[in-house]
Length: 71
Image 1 (tube, one colour):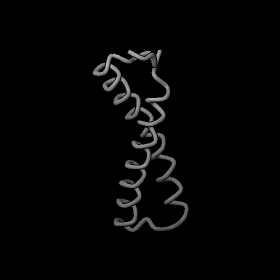
Image 2 (cartoon, helix red, strand yellow):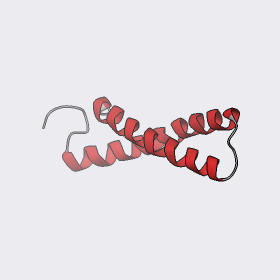
Image 3 (cartoon, helix red, strand yellow):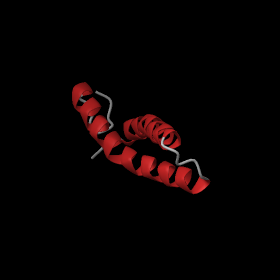
Image 4 (cartoon, one colour):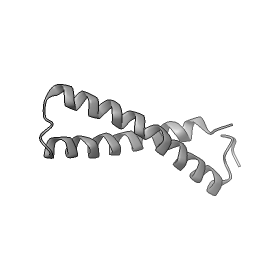
């Protein structure tokens, strides 16, 4: 089981950072058309899922609250 509230918070932070980094990289390299930006946003959201899963498991193991229950 996974702590879904923790995952949602972690995913929102990871998605914001990842999409921002990818968008800055795309704009700096000249990919500034709307199609390119849309692809970057989708890729950023998809890359954020494993990142959020990783950090959710790490934080859950540190706090001992892996199941979403109060310790």
